[in-house]
Image (cartoon, rainbow, N blue to C red):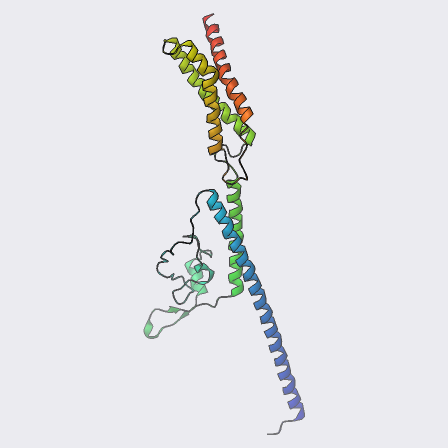
Length: 271
């Protein structure tokens, strides 16, 4: 069979076009692989930073548990559809918090559409075939989960920067309220001492000493301890302000003033 020059030239052009297409496809695939590797490296660095920040949060709220101990028993392998061999399916099998999946749950109908089946011989139950995993889709899902983790981490940091007691109040308003509350509690104790003095259980000197010095000092140190225990955020740089001069002034003024108010009230009722 004789091949004409035109047919030979057409065949040569077809081969050249196929070669160029192959070269372009190889270059595109190489570029895609480089982009995937770069995205995976960036995501790895991001997850490492997230892990370090979570460790800091755990230490701040006394929930940090070191991971250098013996590895826990992972249990039986996952049988998530799509793995094909009983192993973890894609990024969903990555280690993490118990009960948290890497992908959103899908319904049974969507799962049947996503997992084609191969008919087994002799009328057996159809066996599911593994679906090819696209690395770009896996990285995009992992990136979305990292974004979600960043959002929850920022919320946790905001909560950790607030104290347990009166979290939405300013430090000054919180300190004034706590010192005033402790002074009010000391005022109740002062009324008990006054009643005890009225029946002869406490003499006048002891009553005056408690009213002028003892009860105000107890109220001041009580407010100081409360601010240090429940008025301190879990994550804070340095010691939070406790406003010691202001607390001293509040406690050593309110308790004697409460006693004077009590005396004026009693005299007014008797008069």
